[in-house]
Length: 196
Image (tube, rainbow, N blue to C red):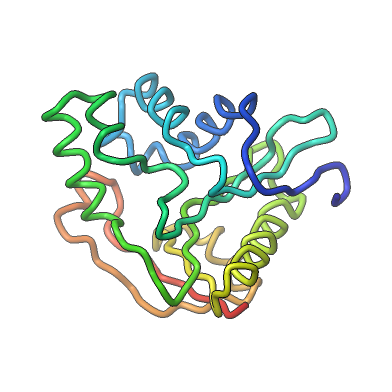
């Protein structure tokens, strides 16, 4: 418990719709062309989010304030699989969406613990929730035997980069996504790593 909120591992069933909305609010501008329209994207996210691949921050009243997904060899928090994409977008729609999402991020890092999206509700920002979520991810990394935590952030997201640097993350790579910028709405991302 920290202040008026708590950080815990896992996503309760009743918070799934809110988690989908929070994730979409944070990443919809990047994923909109691929996973939109919004109502379909929210239904898809609600279906595919892995409750065992996320840490959350909740208020005393149980409302969701923030979440941080992670990726393991067993899967990722919110990207689903080919079957789920086919279910929501049809055979052809599922195929090209899986292909494009794979080009953006389809890796599992066996050395570093991968963060798969971190977001805090707009009304809850500036209260230390993002920092607490990063600490909880660090604890997950330690518990799973990893020596470092890794994330990717859009190069223009200076607010997030400032938080990550303050928490000990250092830039290791700069990626230019080339023509994918016309689909995902950004041109470069930064890989940052922090030891546990």
